[in-house]
Amino acid sequence: MTRLTTIGFDADDTLWHNERFYKLTEARFAALLADHAPPGDLAARLLAAERRNIGRYGFGIKGFMLSMVETALDVTDERVPGEVIRGILDAGQEMLAHPVEILPHAAETVAALHGRYRLVLVTKGDLLDQERKLAQSGLGEWFDAVEIVSDKDAATYARIFARHGDGAAAALMAGNSMKSDVLPMIAAGGHGVFVPHDAAWALEHADPPVSQPRFHRIADLRELPDLAASLK
Image 1 (cartoon, rainbow, N blue to C red):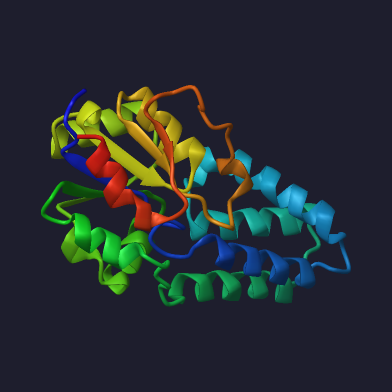
Image 2: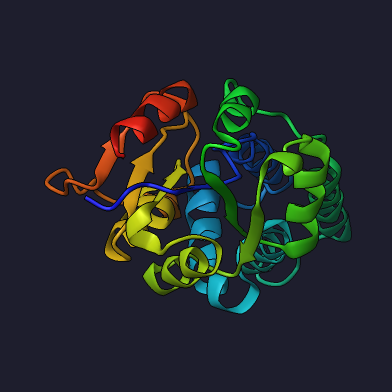
């Protein structure tokens, strides 16, 4: 077995809260359009818009705002009131300014692994927003490298861990998304560690590769140092 030398961390909902703010904004969006669509139908149409728009806008709050505007236009037959558009913009701007809330055990885990492995933060989304959150988190000093990417696939992980480590086979990627953090990392030849979070975006769901020896699941980040040590 190749010795583990590098550990990658996802950011949103692995190191700090993220999806909870989207859920709160979705509830606010539903209230703004309560006279035009029932909440369940509105949520489904918003998710469909997000799915369509990922290729255009990428991941992050700005694309989410545009998908809300598109959905509002659709459900009102393009007669959406100006105050609804203003409410969407206000909600998105509040998300972009929201203070970072570190998840339990994130700071101590990253600090404990620093110096024992190369640590790489691998996150997708809007560049400015991800840089802001990393700066506010206070965790940046522990990472040897930071990669903010448009999407996460096997080729992305292979490239990142070749650049910042000894290749994907000697690396581990820990995150809350089976689709983005676990499956493509295993496909690249590395270890994928699923760290569940109580809020998950529907578009990040995927079945766990339970038969894969390089698939691991931990209850929270406290278990990561012992898991990493066992993979040497």
